Image 1 (tube, helix red, strand yellow):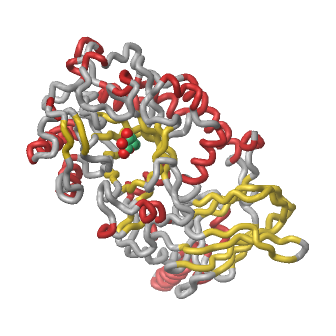
Image 2 (cartoon, rainbow, N blue to C red; image 1 turned 30 degrees about the vertical axis):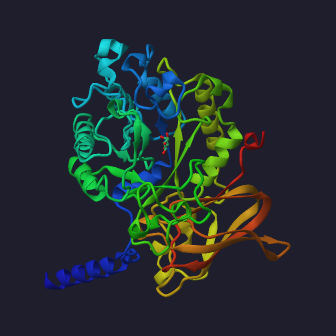
Length: 488
Ligand code: FUL
């Protein structure tokens, strides 16, 4: 008996030794939270700018608008959510209150809201309809609450901060899970202010006591992501064109940013040495303005413009936040819906067939020579598995044998960002007449980097990592031929 026992134990030990997986690479000091990873994975989300401006044809209401003008007789938030879903947007953010101070929900703290509008005889709640429609359609819901309030009499004084936080509490306790809260940097100036009609300036650094406001928000919704110029979770990308920097680190040094006063170039590029993970969000409107204006019905962005935004946001390690403003009736305009559908259709066509999928990959070095870190992992259609080299190696090459010559003009690269963002410079070469020639160069990769190249035919392609802040890791390398519709 003892003999058999010993033999079995030996076999068991041998087996478990052989199958023991090596540990993952050691994560960097600065890594994203689970919520930030999920956020980057959404890639495209939507903004809904809606308030009294929709009725006055303005972009910034003064604060003296009468609630009686707000009457979206056909309001249908599920129409918004369905259009967003078809477009592949994974979350919508509604302006619960813009700078004019008008509240789309019946706030208990002001009369300046839907409750004094003719819409649904003052019994309506746009925020409620919005969050419900998002959830029914499988979208996450986010809210924008303008810190600047041109209606409120106490704006600029201490009392206003109480008012602002009371409103935050209403929005973050009465409407279920809110995934993102948007704190706009535009702050202070002239306004109605309860009839004072004057200019009020605030100290951007101290007035809102942002650190305290942020923790107030997190106490109410622990998983929420907070957007502002300065983060702490999501940062403004530094422009309203929807373009991230060609170099875009998802990291920042909090000392170098202020809400409403940050260096836009710094926000655009992020900081390779930043001590906090702060994702870049690229906001842009589908029309020239953020709010609906009838005269802009013919100015909805073309497919070409929307693709440009996609490649310069999602394609540069950012999240694309595309605004679609409802009409005075409360619906997305058909031109906007058409543009959204078109964009999704063309993106789907472009990114359907990865011509590198399952092809043979060899790396200049593979960590521990173990399959867990094998080069093959970059073409296995999973963005969880990854290739990494041995410790101490910060430049490396990964060569893909495509077998047959393939024709492509898009390259997608991804890092497994749960370990941090590392690659700082890379190039892509192709084999042409038995020689490696340069096709493209880039700096950062991050969650996703898409390179647009001339139409290229080759049977061998390689990624050369030239500089990395730590040992590099790559989870995905894919090549595609763009839909012919991209160039129409
Ligand atoms: C800006 C605002 O002033 C615009 O009206 C708009 O809401 C945009 C998203 O942010 O700072």
